[in-house]
Length: 228
Image (cartoon, rainbow, N blue to C red; front, side):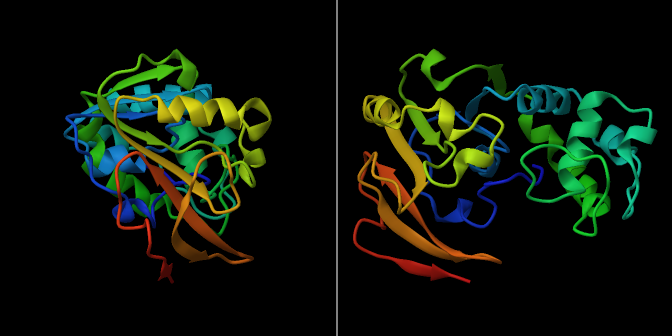
């Protein structure tokens, strides 16, 4: 719903659709997959308290309350505004797009004045979701579509809850043990599951190959495409 480092905005349409009535997103972040299939039962979990607090706050907001949040222009300082901390989290992510944490000063890479209209129009979708703070290990093993998008083994060190806190061998075994449909996101540098190349992604500074592992066959088992 907001801009976030590593979010799947450009990739979410490429993942297999859910085969169950419930979606569970460990390492939920901005939960692009759940937003695409928002009318399912949704359970989000994240260790980063800012993410959890922001989702819970958004669930309580109306469309008009989001629209009433102030506009931000380049150079504006959030610290000068009398707003709830969660509102500052939301705006702070959007005024510096692709950030790992909310920022205070609006950059030129700021689309908040348009973002808030889109967020306001979509906030009704998340009212029924369950959002909890914790680790993926806290989750019960239930039949669901598990969309697992952890900090990547190579490149995920920028997150507040970074790869330094993840035992990828353990995480891989956990993913394979889930009931239902399992979709795991990574890039092709990772070895902790048998990841299949999905798309080449051309960024501003480098090219990476997004990859997928699933316990159900996908279109990417033998095919690699290009994303421009």
